[in-house]
Length: 88
Picture 1 (cartoon, rainbow, N blue to C red):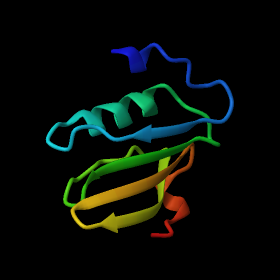
Picture 2 (cartoon, helix red, strand yellow):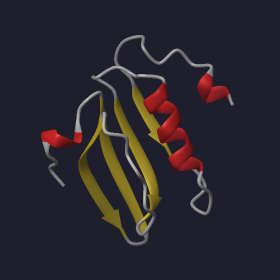
Picture 3 (cartoon, rainbow, N blue to C red):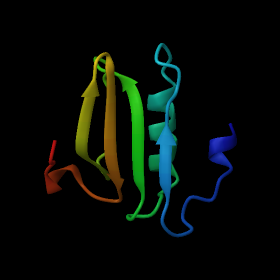
Picture 4 (cartoon, helix red, strand yellow):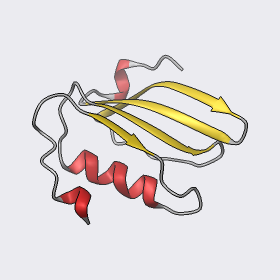
């Protein structure tokens, strides 16, 4: 896929994800981003179904979550451990 070809380690990044809700594409992309070791300054914004379970890698920190009806928006910092805590 094209996402595997991008060089993610070049400076700050903002990654906006709005995959089709009824697929596992969100989880697949999150996993690829973790493999690519994007920079610690990177922020990922993921739009998904409110009930959708996403497993974030340990190096990602969910720092904010917003609910709009059936939609959930997760804000994730890359390059940090879950043990740093969250501000949801």
